[in-house]
Length: 107
Image (tube, rainbow, N blue to C red; front, side):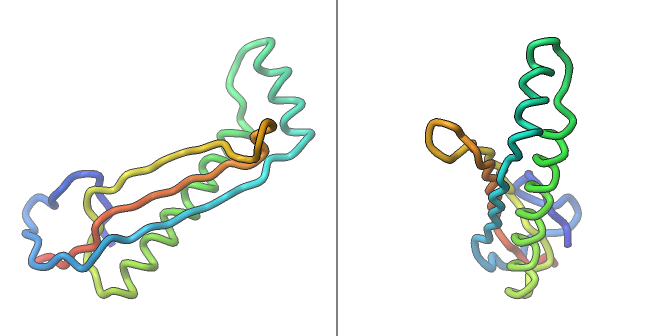
């Protein structure tokens, strides 16, 4: 399955628009990881644990979107948009990643 942020696939004309497809992933954060990430913020550097969680959430959301497109018989997803959001009240204890795009058939 071709997945692209562009509105077309070079060399493969869109022959049909199948529909909008989406994927979401909500991941909880861990109190110990949060604590060590806070220390990392104070001393500087990247938070590898949060980066890993972001990748996992993004991959899960993309997999859901691709599965939905396959169910619709699509060849590709174009115009893909990724959104990241911290949710969970004042503590922002959850990470949500949502992705959407247009499922299409290619010629």
